[in-house]
Length: 352
Image (cartoon, rainbow, N blue to C red; front, top):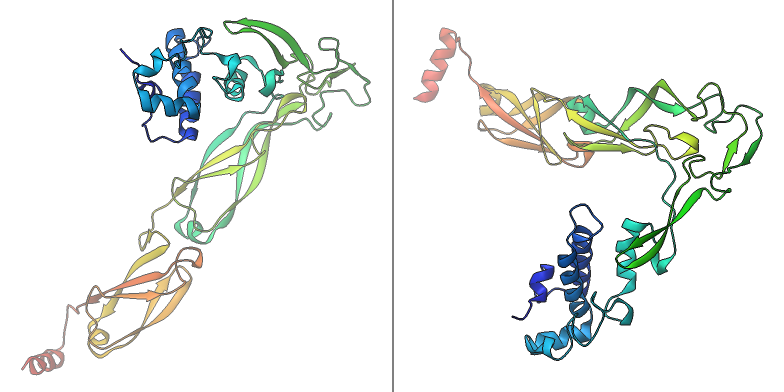
């Protein structure tokens, strides 16, 4: 039975070449035989499908001839090609494979080795609760953290002050350890960060006594955080480099702040608009006039036309979230509970 290469890659016949490539890379990552849950047979099948669909000319023939295509020697396993779909004879884009194999073997494009990045400090996550008004207009907050920080004595180098620096004997100053790794596709040269110098290529003759040569110390730190106006509840702020410091002068991690916005009894946010309700006395509703409404920016006077009904909304432009949206003031008419005889008489006469 003819194989459906589109089905194997999980794409439609109208998929673009970029979509074909993307599907191939994702599936190759997932089913690679060197992964714990890899599937060699599935991996071969994916390669076979991509060898055809990833080549515009072969794809055109496959679309035209269908099941007869394999008999013509165009498939990934036909025509005497190697059992893995002819990687070396143009069937597969080697750039695609290098991208994939690089994740497993440390190999860069063109078959060259690549060294993994130097040590990076761990990220920190925390929650921060702010008031409704702070979420609308922004605010400056101070957060306290207890984290790995750069050692103040050695300035993060891990060396005792004035200590001599020498070439790392483990890696010979390269900062990496190179090894050969045999795989089903042949031998690959891999490079990993030197465990002794952590990629620096040099080590001190004497390590810092304060941090035992790590270059980091645990301490309490206070950070000023700028909360941007218009931030939403559950939004996450990323502060680059504010996480834990890394050993041996590596890059610090990031700080992720999960924002919690307190509910307000009077104001509700709807997109960039703010909605509020304010009372309107019976007389002003009937005869018109002005009322004073308490907004997030203080008291404001609102003109009320004659015959205003309960539930009517007045829009104050530019008074919404971070001055982008509007403030929508909904009025509700209040009815007096106690009336004098004179007031009751006036109402009776008004009704007549």
